[in-house]
Length: 120
Image 1: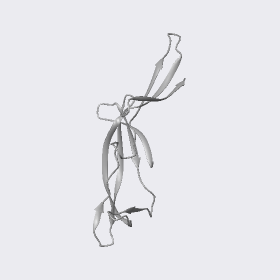
Image 2: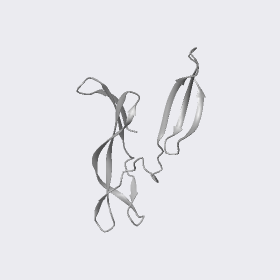
Image 3: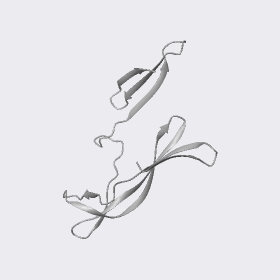
Image 4: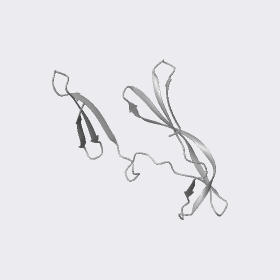
């Protein structure tokens, strides 16, 4: 994570902006698994799920590598999809009684099951 900001949009509502990156000198595998140096990056932005009432955007300089053959290839960006290693996680806080005793739930949205429940 390189930066996290709340920025007002044109209508004055704040948006969450997360800037992602990688360490200088990083190498990424080509189609054959050979680790290749970064040639340059391509700026990409994705809208993520909202963070509470705030729209959330991910910003990333997606690396373009130079293969041993001299070709430049853009690395695929991992996204929340099956097999990507990411999990769609839902978080909710709810009152258990009118006395305002709260519980927080963590839910795996793909499997449709509760992962964790805690007081507070």
